[in-house]
Structure formats: C-alpha cells, structure tokens
Length: 288
Image 1 (cartoon, rainbow, N blue to C red):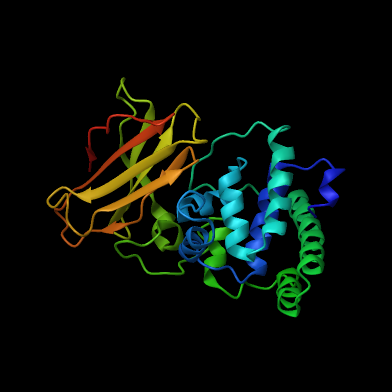
Image 2: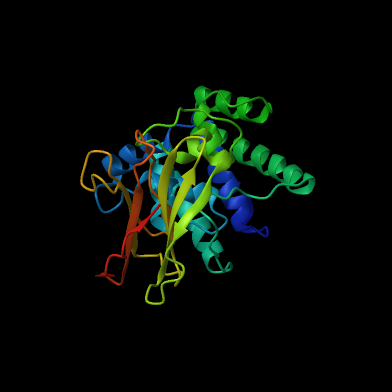
C-alpha cells in the first residue's frame, strides 16, 4: 500500500485507515503499551502519549510526523518501514489541508467507503506481510481480512465508536474504552470567556457518575506545541484522583476519568496550551 499510493490519489482517510489496520495486524496493543514502547525506542524527544497515538488513527486530520513515527516504530520496531510511512505522510502533507474534529468523534461510514476500506485493507495487508515476511504477521493479516470480531477488545479504540463497553468505568480509565460514551454530554465549558484561545469542556456521563476534561485549541497550531487538560475533585484538588493529560502535536486532547464516590462532590477542569514555546496562562477552573 505504501508503494502503490505514490502514483494514486492518496488521501488522509486512507492513510489513517491503513494506520488502524497496521495496529490491528499487530494484535491491537493498548495505546498505553504503545506509549511506553515509543518512549523506550525513540527517547523523551521522540515518544508520544497515548492520547496522541489514539488521535493519530481516529482523527480525520493528518497526524503529525512525530506521532506517525512513534506509532509505526512502537508497532513494528522497523526504522525502514517507519521511514516509508513518514515519506507517505510527507506527500499527503503537501497536498492536504488537515482539519480539526472532536477527539471522541469517529469516522463517518457508508457502503461506498466500506468497500473502499476493504480494498485498502487487502492491499495494505498484502504489502506489509510481504515486507516483514513473518508467518505471525501473515496470520494476523489473514485474520484481519476475515471480517470477524477483533481478538483484542482494544480494537474498539481503532474507530473510537462506542460499540459496547470493554472496560469498566473507574477513576483513571480512558473514557473511550468505557460505556460512559453512550450518554456523555458537555456539562460546562469556558466558551463564554472572551479572553481565551482554547475551548475547555467538562464532559459528564450520568450513567457512570463520572467526568473527564477536554481541551481544543482555537488556533489550530497544534504542530510543535502542547495542550494540557486536568480534571480534579473540587474537595481535593491535589489528591490522588487528579487526572492530567499533556499531549504534543495535537489540537485537542482529553483526560482520563474521575468516577465520583460522593454524589455531592463537584468536578473541575483546568487547561492550558503552549505556542512556540510559550505557555498560556492556565484557564480559570470550570466546575460542575
């Protein structure tokens, strides 16, 4: 697929689909595991966080070069294969204008795109299996083309679509892997603030009695910069339940969950962004 797209009209959608297939062919390892591998293989200046890795395959925008390199290296351990993915991304970057979407929004689906996706998966599987040349990977490629359910429940993260819970809601859990997405809503935001250059939201799930924070830049200058979002209990702002996500090279990110143990407890979210090495002032907390 990587070689064939050089002469074809490659798209960001196809690129992201192929990244998801690459992860599927390697057993759908959890993004936390991929995060640890990326830092081990690429060091502190090359590794990226699990949210960035997740967004690299679920966003409709083109992932950053750093995110693509970290994802492919953590999956394959192959510098040669990683370089081919980076070159493909570079060709797309010069032809496509990425756009920002909700970090918990999945790709749209229809019959035509499903047929195109199946074709891309077949081409990608054949190419990667031939390139790596291992019986294990070939077996995984065949399984990926069979149309059956993924062997690893983390595969639900590949589309970020709430097809059902695969882990229980608990403090520190990724909301995208819990049933909390089913009734999630925005409880409060800083949208009315006139002096901020990012949107801060507290997302709430009544069914889970849990919340998480989300931050989205308004300037779309995620590349080379970071976003930070933190959710905490108002009664214990610096306690062990405090959850923080610091993500580079993205326009939007979300924190892990806090599940309330007291129905009278309030949750609060704060956030900040960096631009060209300068950190913005931290937003005033929003609480609900």
